[in-house]
Every structure is written in structure tokens, then in C-alpha cells.
Image 1 (cartoon, rainbow, N blue to C red):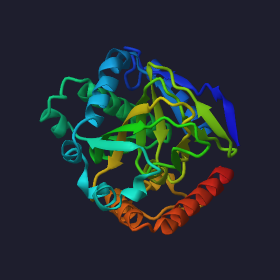
Image 2: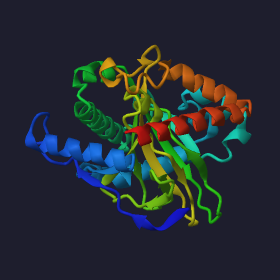
Image 3: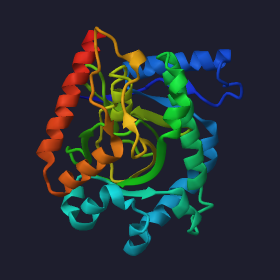
Image 4: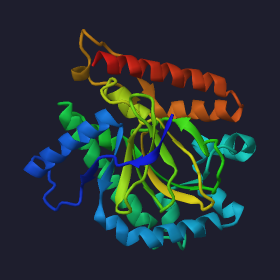
Amino acid sequence: MSSETPVRLPVIDFSKQKLKPGSPEWNLVKLQVREALEEYGCFEALFDQVLELRHAVFGAMEELFDQPLQTKSSMFQASYFEAILGTHQDCMKTWPLMMLIFLKTLNQTSLTSCGLKETKASASGLEKTIRRMILETFGVEKYVDEFIDSTNYILKVMKYEGSQSSKPSIRAHSDQNLLTPLYQNEVNGLEIQNKDGEWINVKPLPNTFFVMTGESLSVWLNGGLRSTYHRVMMKVSKARCCVGMFATPRGGYQVKAPKELVDDKIGLLFKPFDCEEFLGFYSIHAARGDLELILRLIVMSKILQSIIYVKQ
């Protein structure tokens, strides 16, 4: 079931100059973050500075997607998606045109001043602030520096071609990363599933990042927060463009709940894992078309999260 009326998700102000750890403003905002994530698994982060970059960013995205195939291929991160993008194009038909861009790549191209570098810096800074707040609300702030230092930031630019189909432009899923601040153009289509299983059509404000939680953060918090289950339903002919900053645990870092979040009542709910290895496993099996195995893993994860939510 999908809600036809756009729902106004919580909008939390991160533009305040006095938003410093330990300040009254900080403590108020971090409680708002926790409440929003518990209720929806996402929220809008008010960040006025991003408006200054809006025209440049989406103009640059058009330039990026108009580049020759060889140029675009050089900007992909081979370790995760090369098998799919390089040899199994059919696997990507239900996914948006997507590119993974790194700071090094931006520095080496004429696109350096297009606003993407500034967006990357703003989004990664926002993600660090939000993650620090989350850990504080769970009483495990002593792990903040170690956790953040073990993070890779990947900037993804995505383009969903316009469509009026009743089928999703991208299938329902949760991201495997930690947190994702997302910035989109004026074309909507993103839907999130609430805790009652209903699909909500969301309409972010132009001066906000839309923030979603991922599976890795849920595992690290021992199920303390659920990941955001979402999809894209295109209902207009104009393309939807968005920029996402995906915070992902680095290879070699074990995603595991700290001892403070494990007790006799719940126990350790998830087996520790290396996120980079998992993404490699995911890409290989997706490339082979072995989606059934991946879907079984996702379904089991969703069932477990539902059980956790009921217990809490």
C-alpha cells in the first residue's frame, strides 16, 4: 500500500551556528534525530548552505552523464560493481544510471569547481555529526572517533529516467552502508516504508539532505535502529537526479555491536562482518544473477529486525 499524499517527515535544523557537542542546541537536536530514526528510519536535515550549490551540482551531473563511456568508466569503483557494470548489463536494468565518484577523480578532472567537491564535504561533515549524535544517545560515544576513522565516503550521482510505469524504477531495498545523506532535484519519486509496512511518498525540501540509515549501522547498534527500506517510483516524464554520500565501513573493520549494547535479554543479534567483503559477495552473486540467495539474506534480516522492534 502506498500513500498518494506526500508525508512531511521530521525536518531537523543543522544550520545553527551554535550546534557544538555538549551545547543545549546539540542535546536538543540529537534527541530529535533519535526520535525521527526510531519512528521513520529517516529524516530531513535542514542545511541552508546546500542551496548555494544546487544549480551547479545538478548542472554538473548532466555534464557527467553526457561524458563518453570511457570517461565515465574511469570514475567507477571497480572493486564493488565492476562485474555487474562491465559484463552483466542486464542486471542493472532495474537500477538507475549511477556513478561512484571519489575526491581523487574530481581533482583530476575539469569538474572540480562544479559543486560536487563542496557537496561531498558538506554531506560527509553532516554524516559525522549525525553519527556522533546517534552514538551519544545510545551511551557509546567513546567509540565515535574509532568508528568514524574506520569509514570510507563514496559520492554517488544517480539519474532515474522519467517514467509513468506502475513498476518501481528501483526495487525496494535497504542500503548496506551506515548512513546516507541524499540530495535530489525537484523531481520526486522516493518512497520509504514505515514500521507498519505502508509506503510513504516523500517530498524533500530544496534546502535539506534526506538522511537514511543502512544495514551496517543497524548491525553495529545491535538492532537499536532499523535500516530504511525504500524504493523509487517514477510517475513523471522528467528525470530524477540525486547525489548521495554513502558512509561505508572500511575493509578490515569488523562491524560488531559494542559490549555496552549487548545484554542477557537480547544478546548479540548479528554476526560480526567485514562490509567490504560483503559488498564483494553481493556484487559477484548479483552479477551471476543469483539474486535469490541475496534476497533470502535480506528477508531474514528484515524478519530479525521486526522481531527486535517488537521486543523493544
